[in-house]
Amino acid sequence: MSPVSIIVAASQNNVIGRGNELVWHIPEDFRYFKEKTSGKPCIMGRKTFQSILDQLGKPLPKRTNIVVTRSDYEHKGAISCHSLEAAINQARSEQPDEIMICGGQQIYKQALEDGQVDKIYLTRVLETYEGDAFFPELDEDIWQKTEERKSETTSPPCLFQVFEKT
Image: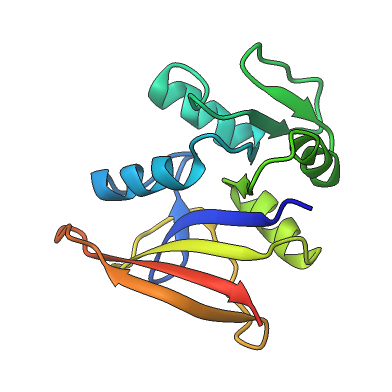
């Protein structure tokens, strides 16, 4: 069965966004996101998908975009599902090496609470920000840091961390 991973960038105070947008611009993190998610199904909430459309003008390229929505939302570049479980099952039907959960706050929270996540790719932005969307605190009894490297970017500095279930 394909493992499920979260990919997220969060500040020191766990902010992941404000007004449905990122609050920083880190090209190195964008490259990391692309490297980790290309060729894999990417599950996200409708607001996250809309923010990608607003930024890129199109869905994430070279990935199956799966949108979790309670509404009848449809977009020709994405598959809509009415639950996270349905989205994961849809992604698994492709038999990928890995399934990526790309946000936002509610999707991350539900995936972690449901115990469906095997790995977390966390870009820790080493500053604090004002925001209205947050990444949950990780339970150290469940998650162990297995990798960490410093960014080459200095403004703002960040750490690329990988956590796996213990």
